[in-house]
Length: 308
Image (cartoon, rainbow, N blue to C red):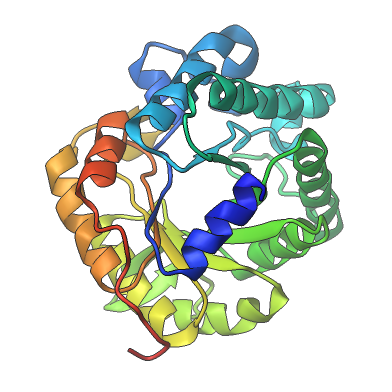
């Protein structure tokens, strides 16, 4: 049975699965400079051993799934940084470093998720829908070529981009896990870049596209909690959560309003008790937080159903 099959079997049995924490902010915390456009992507060539060490640290802390450092290796973002011709090489390096870390540190099955994020942040000209579709498809298939176990769509913050990214990921034949980033606007949960539709309406238009797991990520804790309630009402499959602590002032993460490992564990316990099965951390959440989750979360999530 493959690592992915073993993990999927655990999820099917209702077990809680531990995701890793942040990579970009952890690189910054360890002194690696962040690029003003493609953020943590340059670390793949400037500090590859630090990238690998972070993956290893998460595995040793208890993560069952590590995420590749490919958040910003999509072609549109790299082109703005003058590095568009490196999309294939940087993506391959990121997957290879995650595999090396797994080989070095894992004493149990650990899966590798290939990260794909919405592109367009800070771009002088946002990609056209056709350009965005091609870029998502390119990255998805590069990740599949590299040998990731599944694709993790991160920071999906508007309906149009999310639809293109989901379709690209699904086209690889790999499991597709979708992470939505949300906020609360006048008491209503919306995607970060909502054009007026509620998060519930966004989900209604996206859940038929082939996602295998729905998570709320890169969102403040209060928004995460509220968004998970919406997911629970509309999605009967497995769900995940990995919140952030702090805020971005490009290119650096600001670590004020930090959440301690014990505080994060307490928050995550509430998620698992409500039926969330995949739990990790996003920006500002590090290996000690993941260790706290591994040591403190119940082995099995509370059964849940849509509308419950």
